[in-house]
Structure formats: C-alpha cells, structure tokens
Image (cartoon, rainbow, N blue to C red; front, side, top):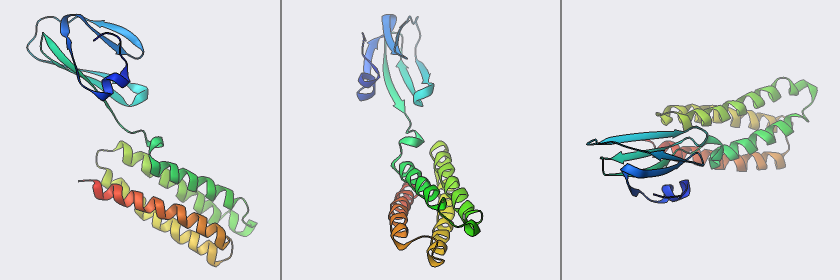
Length: 181
C-alpha cells in the first residue's frame, strides 16, 4: 500500500505485500519489513484518537484495518448534558442568597455527576451499570428542578427549557442502556 491515509484505511480493508509494506502511521511513513512467518497480528495504538490499526496476515500478505472508539465528548448525549450543565450554572447564578449555597450547589454538583457518568459509561466494558447510575442521578436532578419551580426560584419558561433538554437526554440514555447486552 503506497501513500494513503487513515480515511482510506477506515473505509476498507486493504491487502498489501508484507515484504515491502508502507503504512501511514501518525502522519509519518513507516517502512515495515517482515520476515517469514505463518501468521501474525500486529496492533498499532493511536493514543489521541482512541483507535488502533490491526494488521493480520502471513509472510506474503496481510490486511490493515482501522478500528476506533467514540470519544465521550463527541456523543450527542454528552453534548446535551453539557448544554444542561451550562444552563444550570447560568440559572443558579441568579438564585437568592438563601438558595444559592444550598439548592443551587446541589444542582451544580448533580449535573457534574451526570457528566462523569457519561464519561465512565463510554469508557467501561459494562456500560449498563454506569447508565443505571446515570438514570438514578438524573431522577434526583429532575426532582431538584421541580422543587425550584414549586418554590418559584426558577420560572416556568426556564423549566420548559430545562425539561426539553432533560427529556431528550433521558430518551438517549434509556436507548443506550437498552442496546447493551
């Protein structure tokens, strides 16, 4: 395989001659000379991209294929939780002194816990456990928002904005949890 890039490797599996293969790794060309062997699997880890290049073959030919994992900050649900975090932080800024350091701090702490749960769920092998924890913490956040509305700390208009975001987040997390084995 001459030239090429990761986008070329990601779209298809390429068969190349093992004795004079040129692999494009990290933007640099690396010459790979392989001697006689029956079967070999080589993994090249790409740290910043959370992906790896898998090369499988024998002494005459091998196949290259790029595998990658989704980064937590690229997930749509993480983006929505991040928007919710920004919204909660902007709302608690306007709380009266009586509620700013009690209920306001609890809201901030709980929304940050949600962000951590998504990071951990994306990273873990057993995602279901972390998604269940997320849903438990998510229900507590819903109750806190409802309490703020009932105490007239947050307006109905702001509650509608928060509820719209939270409804989408709940559906995404439930779908993600149900898709896990």
